[in-house]
Amino acid sequence: MVRKKKYSDKDKIAVNNRHIDIFNKSLDGIEIMLNGILSDLSQFDGSFLDLPKSLISALDFIISSLSKIQKGQRLALNLDDENISSENVEPDITVIEGVDIKKI
Image 1 (cartoon, helix red, strand yellow):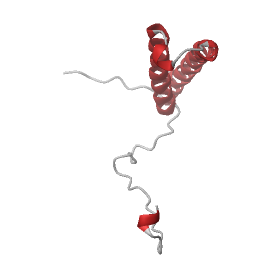
Image 2: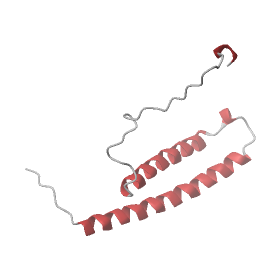
Image 3: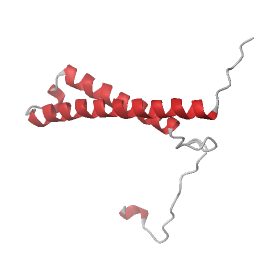
Image 4: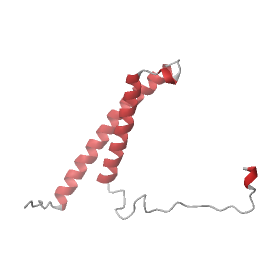
């Protein structure tokens, strides 16, 4: 039988603060890499279809990293309400009366 260790609120806060610090440092590193790639892109005078594969891979890595950092920060900062998920939210629909669909 596996028993979960009970952590005090003080321990949870300390760990959470460390996570936030690490996420912020990671974000700083990713920002440095992104600025370098943007500099390379601004100097590139060819077609975007001719971009070096290494540049595309690095950009993909940065985008993936940013997504993970954001997810971790939101979790560490408790920014997402557990009871609300994007699957359960109905989109807002605005109905405009008197519009001729053929002219759109």
